[in-house]
Image (cartoon, rainbow, N blue to C red):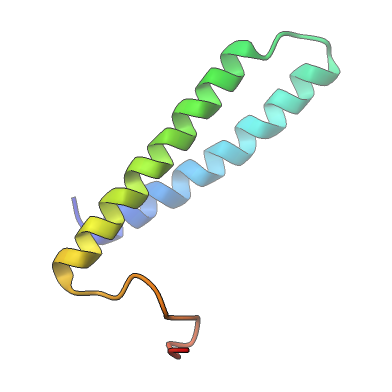
Amino acid sequence: MGLDHVHAGIEHTRVQVGRQRKEILQLQRAGISTASAELLLQRMLAKIEDLCAERDRLRKEQGSPTKGRVLGGRSW
């Protein structure tokens, strides 16, 4: 799995997490149990953590910096 693929997976899952959180709020407002929706949210968050770990591992293998860079490429 390449670094670009991992980045895309992280972004895609983050979008799904946002949608899931909105859905949970709607269910709560309607008085419907959110237990299964919250379990799904936890699995999504765990997937993001796994993808971030994979991203960091791939960066380390490629010799890319993982910290200390900001937008614009400046190092602080």
